Image (cartoon, rainbow, N blue to C red):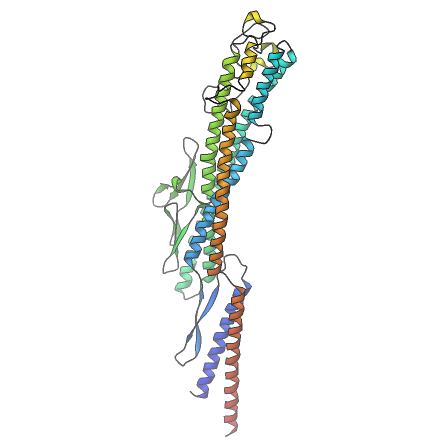
Length: 451
């Protein structure tokens, strides 16, 4: 090889190693940048025996990335459901002042009245405890309804975020295809797109398949959400029963509700339309049975004014909605003499047989085959078990996500130790090329001086 050939080889080596050093430095500086995927300079030999940078490639493992996105979507669903169930449990079964506490206080007030049926203060206490139970059941039902509206609002926000993310991914598809067509490096655009895909996975789950032109086709809920440069938006409404419905509108509008089971959207749907709906139905059934059981006894009683047939609560028209509509009979307000404690006119003024029956409701299996305390305990236990299940799922997904993130980071992330090794290697190669260049320069100078 001539000296000028050696000069060209040294020059190519300097340029190639310099480019590799630049790429390595870029990796180091972006080691903690979210979504950044490690780059490497791909070196190849030239026809003349030198070296050049063929391309700069992302060391991207799509399988590891897809697995991480899948685990993220499952974790997000469990976490969203667990957080919602915590709110529901706090509303339905607080440590003190619960519906169960108010019900037992009412029973105790009638037991006290049975001991001294002519005491007007005990009659007033029975009225106060009746009002308190009705108000506690009604306010609990309305608070659960408000929780449902809050979850619905969050779901709408998530859907809006999903559509914004789909638009971003479709736009990045276009930019990446354009860059590749022009022979550019779309690595930075791919980083942005993968980060958007991960966020979409958190919201509703996603699977991406990249085509030869660099554009991805994105699948979720059994539908194609992004294809080429266009996307199919997600929308939601409520069915006749008030449950959330989700649609993907492409060439046609498809109902995908049954497939929304991962991501934050899946967690919110399960918490609102399954867990919360079950709790509200149980509370309605409880209120319906409580009102009817107490009314059945109280309407047989005689007040100290000699009148009978008065209900204790406003009779519920239907079981559905009974909890929110729970109310003490308005005719009792401010009238202790209307509390039906006696079982017959002849017992007045001190009869207590009906007051005893009302007090015995605390231990009688008069509420769907259960006692008053057991009936509410069933409601509290049900929501507690649901929350425990969600928390267990969340803990499991925390662990599986941590493993998936570690594998994805190992495959696609930047290792400072590895970059330092590469940096030293490229630096030595650069120094070697520089030494060749200096040696050739000295030889040329010697050759020129010999003439």
